[in-house]
Every structure is written in structure tokens, then in C-alpha cells.
Amino acid sequence: MNDATLPGAPSLAPAQASSASPARQSQFRLIAACSIGNALEMYDFTVYSFFALLIGKLFFPSHSAYGSLLLAVATFGIGFVMRPLGGFVIGNYADRHGRKAAMTLTIGLMVAGTLCLAFAPTYAAAGLFGPLMIVAGRLLQGFSLGGEIGASTAMLMEAGGIKGRGFRVSWQLGSQGIAATLGALTAAILYGVLPQAALESWGWRVPFMLGLLIAPVGLYIRAHLDETHTAEAHAPSPLGTLFREHGDIVVKGILTIIGGTTATYLVVYFMPTYMIRELHLPPSLSLLSGCVTGVVCLVMSLAAGTLADRLPRRKPLVLGSMAFTLVCLYPAFWLMTHYPSVPLVLSLSALLTASVYLGSTPMLLMMMELLPANVRASGLSVIYAVGVTVFGGSCQFIVTWMLAKTGNPMAPAFYMMACGAVTILAVLTIRENAQAH
Image (cartoon, rainbow, N blue to C red; front, side, top):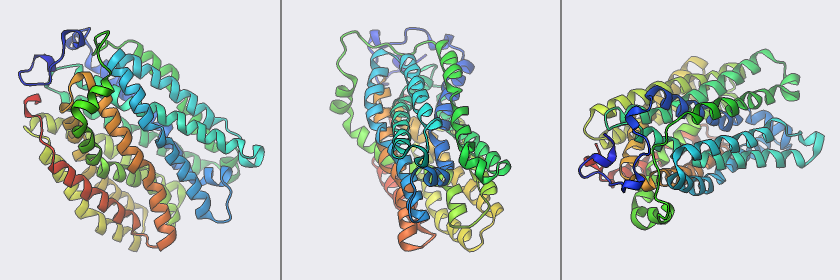
């Protein structure tokens, strides 16, 4: 049974129904195709953050260490600028031509972007051409990921009945945990075994070259999926329908993901840089924070998805998770800055990540259930891309600027607390689609 057979659920026109019975599709193959492909794409996109210090030095020379780092994290943020456009274009494509076609397209685009990063010449070797290649690669990666999230999450939700829906969707976020773990582990190994000269010469390129594995792996596993959605030949534009009929959901959705997005990009991806620059911990050990938080992200996403399948409502879990995170942020960063040690920082990072991801899967599921199938990929793509661009893409730059200007190591906590408060207020305004459960 799928959404179209549920009384009161968002209806699907006959031509929009699945072209193949979701029940026939192997759940293992589906989860593997969506999560492995998404994990590899997220790996390429986020591994940049673990080498921000080196990339800043090699491509953005400056008179101050903070200046180079600011330019490097700004380029990290540039990748987010293209996310909304990717979300609009590829999300619309997924709702009109199918999830499978869109997911294949995103992998090709991600490969092109990663090639730019892997083979970009440094500033010393080629002047401005090197930084321009880095920027071009980030733009292509951002465009790809802008459409990947909506298409793959929609497929995970649609390829089966309501039972197990939360667990399937949880792999979307769980795969990001896999990506963070692989990226941080690769960086930790390279920082641990290579001398600084080798890292600056060629070592930093290794993760991006490994990321190019997404081409054969991703294309192969996605080529064998069954499509879950086919639109009418002359159906109106999904984007037009989305903004005309569901604009309020889009706005609330964007505000809802602010807290989790900033927490993810600061606690999971920025923490290694924070540990090195602010807490003066060893780079090789500091990068273990990405491994730890990545594993916690995977485990908690799956646990939250399983829990969401057993509870009648998603909203209380989302609110409880964010409220607990807000309570923990200040004391966690106070302890980190006053008693800096690798075990303590890893433990507190794991706690914050677990708290955030306990509510992230139910939040994602709640948003998906508010959108009918004909605009589901477009809707989630726009919500996710805009929210992550405005707040996820900018948070590392903003926090780095705050640290430089104020010298207060508590800056990340204050910023995340403000964003978390916005999320709580937004969630309170949402009325769940109980009939879709």
C-alpha cells in the first residue's frame, strides 16, 4: 500500500502513481542505492571542510591565518549558493521525469565538481586560475546536492507503505553520517601518516580522488532501481504548483531546519577546525571528532526513524530534541573551552550530535508527509537547499568571523542557540498531517 491508497492522504492522479509496485522493489537495494550514492556525494562535498586550513594556505594566501581561513570557509559556503538553483531545477526534474533520472544526473554533476577540486593547481603554481577552479568545483557540487536530497528522500519514502517509512527516510540523514565518518577518517589518517610537506604537495588531493568513486558505484546501483513516481505528460510545472498551493509549508520548512542545519555544520564539520585553531589540540586527534560525530549521526538517525515509526506524532520528538540541544549547548562549549582535551570534546560533540539527530529524521519525515507526491521532490529540495544555503553554508564563515572579532570561544554556542530558538518557534506553527501516518 502506498500514499495513494490512504484515505485522507495527499492524492495522486492515476498517471502520477508508481510505474512499478513499490512492494516489488527490494528494500535493501533501494536503501543501498539512495544511501550509498548520497553518502558518497556528501563525502565529496563535505571533505573540503576537513582540509579548510590547508586549502586556505595553498589557494587563498593572506597576511593573517584568520584571513586565509575566512577565504577557505567562504569558498566552502560558495558551494551552498548553487544549492537553491539545483533544488529548483533538479527537484522540478525529479517530479516531472522521475526520481531515478534525477539521481543519475546528480552523480554526473558531482563527479565534474570533484574533478575540479582534485586537479586544481595551487595559487603559487597558477595564480588566480587555481582558486577559480576550486570555486567552480564547489559550485557544481552545490548544484548537484541541491537536487540530490529531494529526489533520493522522495524515493525512500515512496518505495513502500507507511510501515517502515521512518526507517527508510532515516537513511537519508544516516548516509550523511557515513560521509562525515569517511571524510574525517581519511583526513585523520593523512594528517597522521604524512609529513606537512607531503600534505601540502599532494596529500590533500587524495580524499577528492577517492571521492571520484561515486561515478561507477553510484551509477551502477542506481541503474537497477524501479521508478516510484511518473508525472502526467502535460502536468503543470511542479514548482508552480508547489509555490501556489504549498508556499506556507515551504516557508515553515525552511525555518524548521535552521537549528539542525547549523548544529550539523558546526558540530560535525567545523569542530575539527575549532579544536585545532581555538582549543590547540593535535590535528590528527582533533579530526577524530568528525569520525565520532559521523558514527553518532548514523546511529541516531536510524534510531530516530525507527522510533518515529512507532509513535503517533513526529512533532513532540522534534521539539524535545531541539529543546534539549539548546539546554546543552552553553555548558558543553564552556567545558570544552575551560578544560580542553580530546576525550572531553569528543564526548560533548557526540552528545550534541545525538540530541540534534534524534529530532532530524522525524522533522524530515514530517515535512515529506505534508507534501503531495506531485511536488514532493521539488518541495523538499527547495526547503532543504534554501535552508542549508542561508544557514548551513554561512555558519562557518559567520562563526569564524565572530571568533576573530570577539576572541570569545563561546561564539559557536551563541550562534547555534539563536538558530535553535528559531526552529522551535517554527515547529510550533506546524500542524502535522496525521492522516498521512
